[in-house]
Amino acid sequence: MYIGVSESRFRTYTEEENIDAKAVIRFPAIPESVPKARRNITGHLEELGLENDLVDRVRLGLTEAVANAVAHAYRDGEAGDVEVLVFVHPETLVVIVEDTGSGPLPHPDGTGLGMGLPLMSVVSDKLEIEGERDRGTTVRMTFDLPGLPGDNDTCGDREGLGTR
Amino acid sequence: MYIGVSESRFRTYTEEENIDAKAVIRFPAIPESVPKARRNITGHLEELGLENDLVDRVRLGLTEAVANAVAHAYRDGEAGDVEVLVFVHPETLVVIVEDTGSGPLPHPDGTGLGMGLPLMSVVSDKLEIEGERDRGTTVRMTFDLPGLPGDNDTCGDREGLGTR
Amino acid sequence: MAPAHEPSNGTATVVRLEGEHDYDNSPEFRARIEAALDGSQGVIVDLTEATFVDSSVLGILVRAMREADRRGLSYAIAVNPEPADPVRHILELSGLLGVLPLAGNGSGTNDSAAPD
Amino acid sequence: MAPAHEPSNGTATVVRLEGEHDYDNSPEFRARIEAALDGSQGVIVDLTEATFVDSSVLGILVRAMREADRRGLSYAIAVNPEPADPVRHILELSGLLGVLPLAGNGSGTNDSAAPD
Ligand SMILES: Nc1ncnc2c1ncn2[C@@H]1O[C@H](COP(=O)(O)OP(=O)(O)O)[C@@H](O)[C@H]1O
Ligand SMILES: Nc1ncnc2c1ncn2[C@@H]1O[C@H](COP(=O)(O)OP(=O)(O)O)[C@@H](O)[C@H]1O
Image (cartoon, rainbow over all chains, first blue to last red; front, side, top):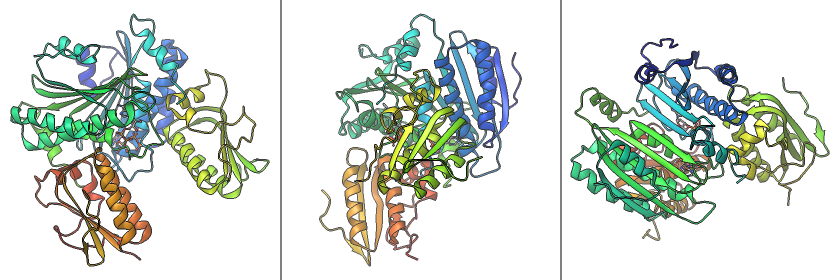
């Protein structure tokens, strides 16, 4: 059941695609929300009975996306919120992380090593980033669910990810 | 008219969406291909009569995507190719850059400042990254075309991007 | 939470991470590893009891490696050898298993960044 | 292509970029800026004749700023003041207009990173 989040780009996704949201949660964009969001999603992933490999990848991707909203979205203004939406869409698990901050902007002065976006793209089967200056960023990660024709070996390949 | 590129994820896009590709070009993944791809796309953008702001953004996004394929995709193996596909889909300009290399992988040892992916996301209205370990990366940037209802001010906002 | 004095193993200080570490609590880890680099001839980061690390932790591990290298200190990471270990999995996904110097399982003083 | 000796403006060396610069030819630019940092008390990077720069060039500009800072050298970037200038636009998009020290239009020796 969809829990409405007003003025959210979530609405578009869920309405257009006519899906049941597993979870919509809103957190303040503060560091403590990073582990909270991860623990919260872990509960939902366990309910879904997903395999460990996938759970690890979703937890990492979600953590990176929420941490980015906390670290980068509200640099120049008042801190706002970060919202997380998780749902199963026919053959995929979709995780959306959204903020209403600056929109994606490079921060070459940052202390990060810039591993967050590549990691989100490594762990997921598809990474989408939409944003608008001063209207926030929406990160959408899609994970193929195993046991579906053709998608099976994508996950297999990823599990066997090389050591260099 | 679609120019077939065998074994390409391009095919899926163009067939599924039944659109006319403006240009499909394949370059070797070597540094010289970066300015070549940019100059090539510039010709197509001029034909389309796009405004300067949009041309600047497309040129930058394309350059970053091609440079990433050259710099990162074939680190651990034989150098391959990078393909560029540009087309106008009803109300958007779509730029796809694809390689058949490692798939997206973080490289924390790199010399880059990690500005490429955030820049691609800043210049475009939507950035999508798909990849599979050892089967390459597909970067898709979507640019709203101005003069269309509702999308107009997206571009406007971006033009006025703040200086901090 | 961090012990005032990290246990030291031979000449190397062991910095042990337990549980989940991310953007929220990684500044603490950064402080511990910096203190260890300042106060000893080498650092072993023991991740065998850690259950989650994110890119902020990975960044600290990579920076500390560079710093140890620069100062001629030994530096090694101990990771649970189980392929299903979530932290090992994260290091694999991030490509760092091939970059960070791994210590022998959970104990060793493998000096992958030995002074010259 | 790069002049053996960059023109110098007072005590600062001017490194001028013309045309398009990206991943392909930026190593050349890096070499020029490093030579300028080594051989003078300050550097002015003149981008007024440049028509395109990518993130590899932006990365070099940021790194050189840090290096000049560390060494106590002056450092400034000259950019075409026209809002439609493509290089100015790229600096805006990247958020660097607010980070890099801008010189007075095309000539000045604005010492935004002056020695202390
Ligand atoms: N939610 C966001 N809002 C604004 N900017 C963002 C957001 N997410 C990412 N960015 C930008 O993208 C850059 C790259 O992000 P990432 O790859 O996670 O690296 P890091 O966080 O280590 O800098 C960030 O430095 C930041 O400038
Ligand atoms: N086509 C690709 N193939 C493999 N890895 C990629 C590709 N594009 C990007 N990456 C990974 O994503 C990281 C971030 O890219 P980017 O933001 O452009 O920063 P930079 O190129 O400066 O490192 C790269 O360092 C690389 O590890």
